[in-house]
Length: 454
Ligand SMILES: [Fe+2]
Image 1 (tube, rainbow, N blue to C red):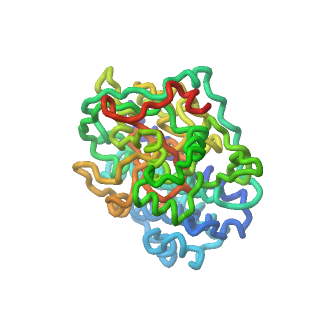
Image 2: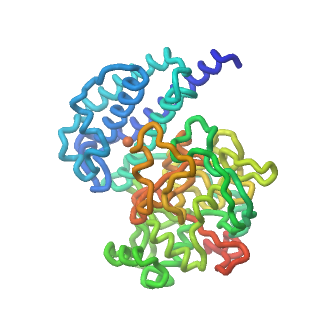
Image 3: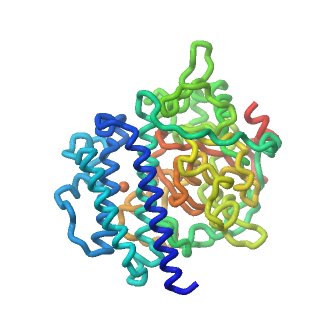
């Protein structure tokens, strides 16, 4: 392709990704009336109308002002939508734009952005090279859409979101081995070449990983219910010290949104619908502390972030790291459960076309997976384009999650993508899988996936 054709293809790709995000934002907000948009459902979350105007404000800031050199449209509202000036708990008390004003602002910004996109040259610096900052803004809106979906999950009231359930698991799902071996050796972690990768995914660097076994699939609800039934929440030896303190203080006895009916059966509430917990679905809405305790109960441990990424990306045939477990192609509907296409994870063992070379399934999509690792910079990290994107979060407070969930869009999910949150958090769409070192001591999984969900 010529450079001009390349630029045109990039313009189309950017416009499509921005449009996808805006369609989703509309779907998450148009279904609610004004009182529901301005209400705060949990101190952990913003009112949805804040997300709506914040999305537009960031788009104006980075695309119209930084790239386009425009003057601020409404400088007086900038501080209201700066996430670092106002924690979520305070946001309902701010003089926020009302829903109609927020929608009008978002429309105005987007119209001007599309004008700018038609004229921009992608050759004037690192911010626009390969369309990076446009990709960053599409990812930003999709990440807020995921947060808004979590707000919907916390909301009480009648269901307002609909989507078809994912297809049932493939015929081989129950015959899969419960764990797969990931051979030892060095692999390339992170990336220096993925154009829209964010600063914390960079640079690519070599990491040695000892051989280990990883669960073929995420831990299922049935397996997790086994931990509960075995008294896992009442056994301090299974929990790290901080985890046990938290379990006591917060009174944890089951994943968030689970409750027992009169007969002792587990029910869960999802997007306004209460139904029996589906045994074969990956467990969702557990904190890092709960995942860590489950792993210890199983005689296993959480995988490190490097182990997770090696399992997901390393191709032993070429020695190279792939963009995704299945290869370098962008995710399609047969690869992974992403982008709110369904409103729930698929049963464990689904998506054979998305399997990694090691045989693990569902590493991308379905549920975010807690890892054992703290959120730390890679060697050679440099903050870009602003310190508050990642750098201010580095340290031992935050744990890394990998792989994206049904709630994450493909533009904000890839083999190198890093998410992070506090170990107590569980309103996000998080689950986990477990690992054990090869050759060392440690529990083995059931022999097959079927035994794990029996
Ligand atoms: Fe944001």
